Length: 189
Image 1 (spheres, one colour):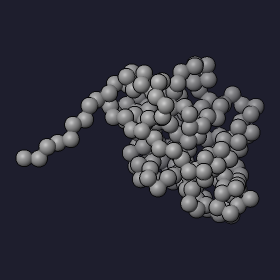
Image 2 (tube, one colour; image 1 turned 45 degrees about the vertical axis):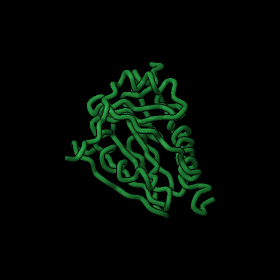
Image 3 (cartoon, one colour; image 1 turned 90 degrees about the horizontal axis):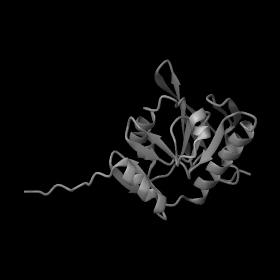
Image 4 (tube, one colour; image 1 turned 90 degrees about the vertical axis):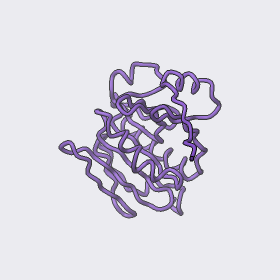
């Protein structure tokens, strides 16, 4: 007879209460809580470069750009995730002081070797249940490559950008050389 591992369901309310007092961040997926590990310097620089680009681009718009210290609540999938970068233009998100965002327009994850498969698979499926989400972007930190998934006629379409190409984030109207994300990373200046 083999024993089954036991999992204890944690409610979203208990997760949020615990997260308020925890010294480390945790993501929540369908009753399970997962501690987040620290990011490498290249991961942080890439996310910061994108936050600066988006912040400058959206400065005069009603949209806000947020980094990895705010959660996205995905009610339909029963999840809370901390994306590396997100943009929301939703009035409720802009006016509330909640510890999470409900209606992101754009979500960006910088891929780590330990999380890449999850970010491309289950996490993408969970994010995909957000009615507001128009674009999901995955950025490699090991080489210059950005993969964009965009909603078009109810289907996700994939487009990849590599060195020497222009990155276009259609959801927010940003166009820039893909290398701009990698400034001070991977030998770019």
